Image (cartoon, rainbow, N blue to C red; front, side, top):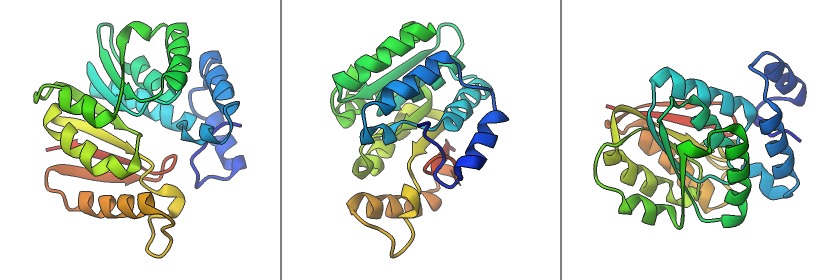
Length: 218
């Protein structure tokens, strides 16, 4: 089953995909292989989100990007396809099992040479990077409890006018007061409030996939 933006009905989602650049055989096979993993497949981004991220990468002329939370590689594939020749994407994840799937599809799509994968806790990876504004784009889709820390570590490493793209900021609607079910919901709700008034960024929360927040570094 293809993942989708949670606010869309199945019928409307099919219409949306029918009127967007179609996914190709590599993407379809990656969706299917990920779905076979069971319930954990819900961590995969929606195809409309992938199309948006590819276009965003191209529009911004991104040459250096970083991803926190790679899973089976659909989001990295989307970003890498938007990079120019010689562009670079650094990916961080903790799972060799999931990222072994990712690497197969990156190479099949011809973008494996643009992607560097590091395995280990994301905060350790981020803190090991120089405190230089080396990246134009960052995508965050990892441990929700650590989202505030990820943003703090990414901030000095993103160039002015660079973009942080934060996934799952609507939590299936559980960020609404009284609808929180766990610590992650409560932390993301507080995170969203903090970003809305954070003067370091221009902030837009989009109802795409499970909520996608865009932060432009001022």
